[in-house]
Image (tube, rainbow, N blue to C red; front, side, top):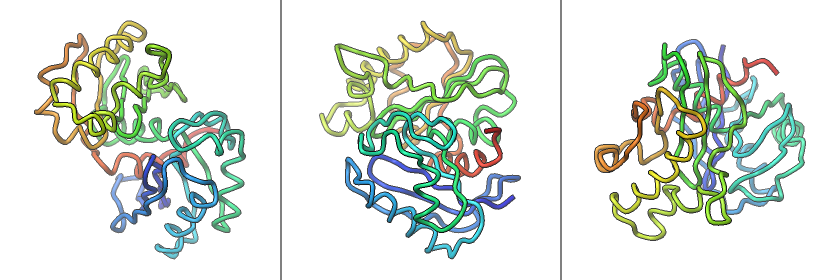
Length: 245
């Protein structure tokens, strides 16, 4: 099946047509920069631009950074609270003139890694984490997804732990890899105590530099960088079109 997958991030929307059987992008992805937080009108315009860029007439599936129940956005992370409590599928559908589905963005990236990447064939409990503007998470047991597990929102000193240990925090505070890894260790420790995963897959841009900071991490689980890299969100969004509703 061919689906236009769109990955919504805290600073940019990215999309490309995807062959869901192979996980291959069918064209070079198109990226649209947005403000942070992102006004609703700007976000709708960004999705419309991606659809028009590819002259796309088929299904559109979107990975959205928040808790998704059916077609509705129940809670939002870094994109902005103005998106909360909206019927996201209807909103994006009106903006593009076609049928749209939405899905949690980290769950989407996890689907891609489990089908085509580092989690392929893995049994037991698998935790996928994406480090970017925040910390996204996807949880799988025996290959089955548990949706909307927002572990980046675990409280830490009165705030979500992603505000302490995201990749954006490392850049903003100019932390060394070792300094930042100490913060990540605290996050992983809390998550391991809750879930006891056999495998932790780390995605986001920092996964491409795993040799710089994995050595500082202290976890019991096997720890591996994501294989899909920057394509995971787009491919996973496309795969999500075929997920049960």
